[in-house]
Length: 198
Ligand code: ADP
Ligand code: MG
Image (tube, rainbow, N blue to C red; front, side):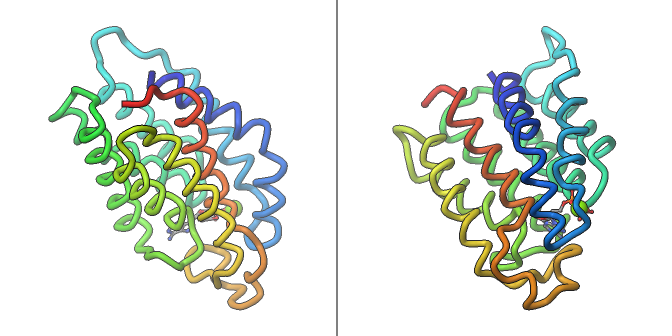
């Protein structure tokens, strides 16, 4: 299930590599798509062991992203999955409540690792509201998360970057959708595509 989610995310990243690089060319160094494809290809190549469970698998995913993505986004996505897997290790039954706790832990991890807040124009501006929407929807949490993620992605165009390379541009970062916010919206869209509703 989680394996399919990440395989679907990997496909979206591969298809959208050019767009991610282009957005990053506007407000960064043009490599976000390349970084994400490198990391997610390595994730897809991981072979989940039969007895490792969701948590063990996500730990492997996290370490791979931290190691293989490069740039700022790799450790941030890696931290997201590492914190989530910590919750799933304690509460392995993937009910709606458990997923909420895991995803919320992931979001908190991103905030700590990136020292970012809402409005900084980063992937956090998508992940945090998407997980809030997930938590509030008991019928179609992944769909709700994906829809919120997509609108939040677009809202990053109206933000002035204050974290990462884009922060050097100040107000010149206005008008461009953040590349990390875009990949994060695809992570949620992939969840909506393949994860069962709880
Ligand atoms: P790099 O900036 O090192 O080239 P990437 O291009 O892969 O790394 O990723 C850039 C994305 O990372 C940005 O679009 C932004 O969403 C995210 N990002 C950068 N710095 C931070 C941070 N401090 N906190 C949260 N997200 C960040
Ligand atoms: Mg970059």
